[in-house]
Image 1 (cartoon, rainbow, N blue to C red):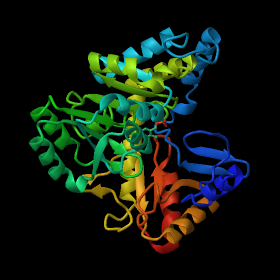
Image 2: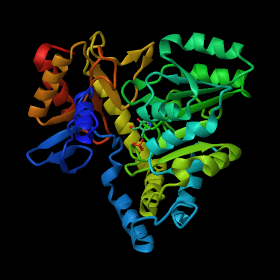
Image 3: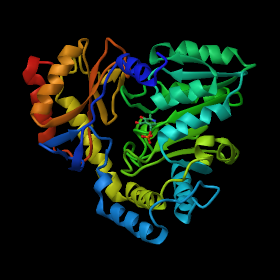
Length: 396
Ligand SMILES: Cc1ncc(COP(=O)(O)O)c(C=O)c1O
């Protein structure tokens, strides 16, 4: 095992799963084209179909003509432009926070912040379904942490209320990337109201912001909840915004501190200015009547999709602890990965791309199809998808 080649071969063999990549040649919200086929797209996070919006592409091109392609440096060197400055203030004021800090990606953000927020007196609580970027960031920070689920949220809250001599950091997501809508956000907001000084609440709404709620504020708005009591609100531009990058909003002191301390932001070449400009245009659309209309179409697709499925189906999880999964991410959970493989292959053969998610991304006994809905899918595409799934084995 001294030789690198042997060591890497051994490590490779021990990987739990090998994930193929799909080589895409072109695409939009409805279709993705590969070398051999044109597929119905139920796999991307382009929830409003903005990744191919011509106005956004034009904004990108115009800024590239002014600034060039790369940002040319970290934000404290030459990498911070007026486009970045305007984008961060526009996002903060849109979401009702004092300040916003941009990152190259949501992953880079999540992997960087925890080391700067916790110490040995901090107790960190994270939902077990949180994204890998949070888990890696927390492991890097060496924080003490406990994981929870919707099933034991009440006992976690009770423990936090009792431990008033500790600082608590609670982390969850608005819409989980592999599980849909979070069911207990109201409970965390109530906790924040009753014990504001020693509890810091972080909500990552990467899959909700822009896509959900009347104004696009995300999952909380969709559930009729306010964002005021959240300390740090995280989002990404790579999903509903159709562009790229991550952002975190909060009060002036917290964000100033993160700006001065988070190494994954300080020591990385900043987002390209043209991406910031494109994202500003995307935000303009998200705030406009066009954005409202797109969100309405997405909402209709989410309801239409669940109307096509049998509510009693053991595979379809559109209710979790009484909360209807209103996210664009719909799940069909199987107990057996052979059945999942067979359905996935059948869909692929019928030109439908959906996510196939297995352990270690989700628990071993709950492999699943991850079906991403977007605003631009016509009903007939959803009908076809369900028809194909059901033709296997009356699954739904
Ligand atoms: C909840 C959540 N946070 C963060 C990320 C990472 O964001 P990005 O793709 O911008 O790195 C993801 C990615 O899917 C996610 O689901």
